[in-house]
Each structure stands twice: as structure tokens, then as C-alpha cells.
Amino acid sequence: MLCDLCHKEVAVIHWAVVINNTKTDLHLCETCAVKRGLISPEGIKLKELLPLIPHTPEVDNIKCTKCGLTIDNFRETSRLGCPNCYIDFAAILIPLLRHIHGSIEHIGKKMKTSKTSLPKKSNSEIKMLHTIFKEQLKESISKENYEKAALIRDEIKRLDIE
Image (cartoon, rainbow, N blue to C red; front, top):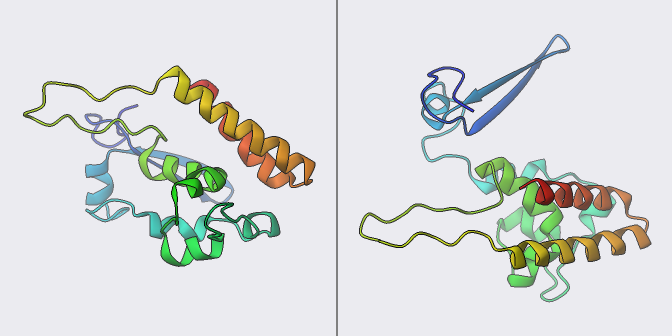
């Protein structure tokens, strides 16, 4: 999708504004968003989005099973404690990363001197994510944590689309 303003670059910022019960969507490239002051020239930072994490008992009780990091620790520092945090906090991290980058898949940039391209996500990686999410979904449902289960279900659907 091209930028609604310049019609030249790919839109990476999707802005929704509601005025008098009318929703207006604006799709902007990074250059136009910076020019209009919607984002800083450095881009969107994770720390700026941490307030978007809902304060519900289900979310507030998320804790890493390996290092014990809590969601409150993550909100304060915007840092994870160990590799397992990425799995235990997936239902929270994936929407944040999607909001920042527009995707959860890191494609990266090719170095000018590099002659090789970055590998694409393999089917085994996608299957691994499916397995992790399905286990988390079953656990959330068994604990009657339906809000977290809904977040995980949505991520499974997005993974199927990509």
C-alpha cells in the first residue's frame, strides 16, 4: 500500500483517528509521518508503546517461567530477562512488534558489500511458533484466562495468513 500523501513510498505507519464517531484511516510512509510530526525521526520506540499493554489481572500475572521476570518489570525496563521471555511474553510482544515494524518477521537490510541474502522464515520455524502458541492457548483456556487466550488465538490466525 502506498502512502496516502506522497503516493510514492510504501506506507509503514497506519494511523486511525476517530472524530465525531467517524473513523478515518491514514496510511503514511515514514518520511511523511516525520514531516507531519506524527513520529520522531528516530522512529517508534518500544518504550513508547509499553503503556499500550493492558492492565488486566490476566496480563499483569504473566511471568517468565525461567527467569521470573514479570510484566511490570518489562513495563519498567522495556527489557526481557532471558530467551524464554520471548515465548512466555509472546502474546504481548507480537502485537507490539507488529505495531512498531508492521510485521513480526525481521527481513533486515542487505549490506552493500554482502552477496548473500538473509534467509526467509522456514516452515519448521512457523511450525514451532504454532506449537508454542497452541500450548499457550490450551494452558490459558484451562486456567479460564480467556483474554490471554483470545490474544494468542489472534496471533495464530496472523501466523496462518503470513
